Image (cartoon, rainbow, N blue to C red; front, side, top):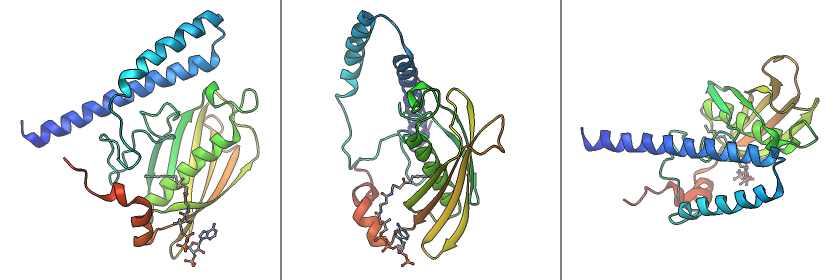
Length: 220
Ligand SMILES: CCCCCCCCCC(=O)SCCNC(=O)CCNC(=O)[C@H](O)C(C)(C)COP(=O)(O)OP(=O)(O)OC[C@H]1O[C@@H](n2cnc3c(N)ncnc32)[C@H](O)[C@@H]1OP(=O)(O)O
């Protein structure tokens, strides 16, 4: 096997392991948020979790370093808080996008609760910001969100399969507008939350100022 194939294998194996750890963390968070176990069990769990966290903290990256398993240009972000399989914060949302249109699916557990039984409004905004970002990126004009307006029409139920949609609605020079919505998978035409986002494509010097350290090739 060539060195290149071996390194691709290692990368894929690492991504699998990161996803597995993410799944375990999501299970932990879901159980920890839903548990009514005895108080003593909570204390024991806290101790065991601190023990498990210790070795992971022995080699950590700096803020200015991209995760070794990520591929920025290829759109692989293992720890993104919405789509990252390795992020305990991410449901995660599974997204397909092309030509300025994005469709996503996810189910939110009790950890995302705002009003009892329903999603926190900030979580809905976060999901939609990400979805709009995918639509905008797939249109060929990636940018950063400079404005996000959300309208909460009906509460988003937890523990229910959701369908998220987004599409580019306007392009004006460096400014791209996209609109999106959250519905349940069962009733995709009944809109629960809508969002409109304005994205701005960065000028070269803005990209350099904001992302200079992560745009440099990784030292081997
Ligand atoms: C496949 C991967 C998918 C990834 C999805 C990720 C989704 C998540 C996306 C995010 O959450 S990004 C993080 C949140 N956003 C930020 O942190 C951005 C913070 N803002 C900035 O850093 C600056 O605003 C930015 C560098 C983006 C732009 O710089 P400026 O604000 O100086 O704007 P600039 O002077 O470059 O002007 C750009 C154009 O946009 C306009 N503009 C800027 N902000 C605006 C605003 N708020 N409303 C309306 N127009 C605005 C501005 O008027 C101007 O219009 P014109 O070209 O017609 O002159």
